[in-house]
Length: 192
Image (cartoon, rainbow, N blue to C red):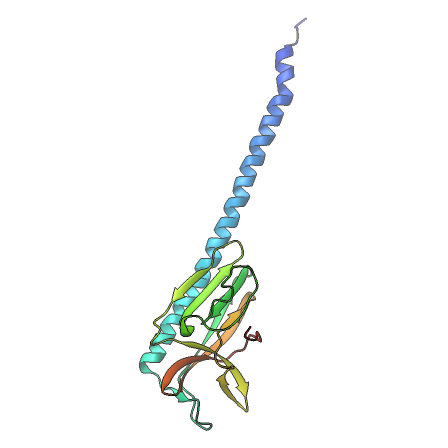
């Protein structure tokens, strides 16, 4: 009759624990990698949307006609409409304002560098900013009043906070001989 190897039977639970630990570590690495890839893919998607918007805006500014916003019956300025498909993990995409300058998660509106920037952030990622030519592109959030779009308050940027498809219209306008990009949308965030 053969004798059982006691050392071999004692090692089975230890090998099982080591195997489970290795599988857990590999699974954790896969989950963390997936989350990082998801953040990168979302940021790339937003960056591609912004690149298209920038291209449309520079074309509009170079060859477009501005509406004088101080004249009530003036013709519409050159417009560009863009459907932006934002990922579900977006925290914000903003035109003309850094909505979270303190990085505390509390969004406020206003203007940053005279409205010449685009900011965005996805869950788990860092704040990203695209600085634009401050002489050519200056965003202003619009407000629909008396059957026409005007600048909201003294000047605010637009902040988008939800994923999915958002349709935004940009219009070239002029106020006091200065050109702006009026966004035909309102985020209903009042200036703090």
